[in-house]
Image (cartoon, rainbow, N blue to C red; front, side, top):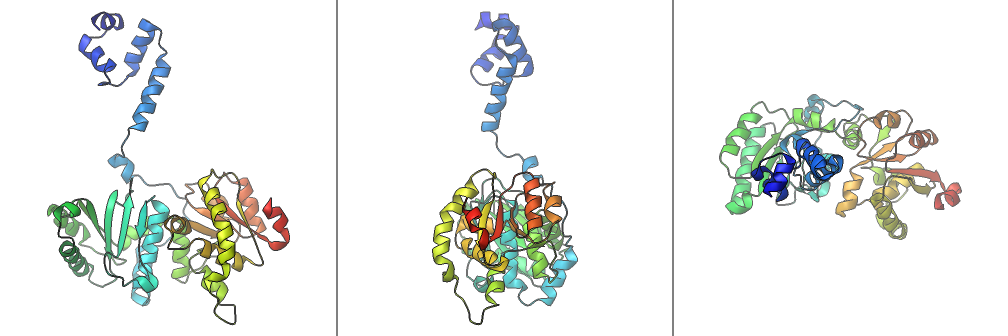
Length: 370
């Protein structure tokens, strides 16, 4: 060890630490080893970089960084406040929005946000388990509460106390982040969070209001498409998959059950999952009698009850007309595109690879099968 350290030109303790894995290979050390033992400095540094990457843990900087998304539809805090003030269904639909935001901007291993008819289910209003997290979705376990009341602080205090009582174990709370969300503006939000976090009752405490939702929605193309439909501001270029089944079924003279597609779903599901798990090299092709039927089928193929497929559903963006897709692929494209028209399909062919579903008439089903 002493002789080798002399050859390398460093002290014995420093060389011992390096050989025993207690010190990383620096550019200087790699250069010295190349001279002393004809080891390639570049190879040593590449091995060190690979080791560092394999053992890296998310840093605070990484968790606070935001994906660059090309602006599509601008929704302000006023939109959220107006929605909750003028829409009686906003409380039950708010859970659907949050689930869409979570699934389209993070990679949770679990996300449960019962909405619509299940919105009043007992327990947490939402729950996430996420290995990495992002500026809005906490890393690890997180329990979510939300309310549309005019008094966000009062609702937050009530939900906070209710959850502390329900989870009496300090050990369990210490592993859980408490999150409260309101679609209204909350001027005292920061002070409330600071006060509650100081109690150290939970692993962490967060609160988001309309201003935060404005910024969060800007990170998700699929959430923007959902909001356009929900706010009654549908666009010519994009749409959400959220109401596709009901939109198609509304044209029938009688109510059609989703089981109508059971046989087709059973055949398509394994193929879809295989395609989804593979690199984005070619589109998934659907042949149908109409665009509406294809979207209704996709809606049934991606049910809310299946965790993996539900996450995919919340990342779907339907492109109805050309223009938007070409624009959006210039930024981060963590969405699944559905190309309805020939023009959009041409845009898709010219874009960089991304997971996309192409809808073709049944007359072209032979092509689709290839």
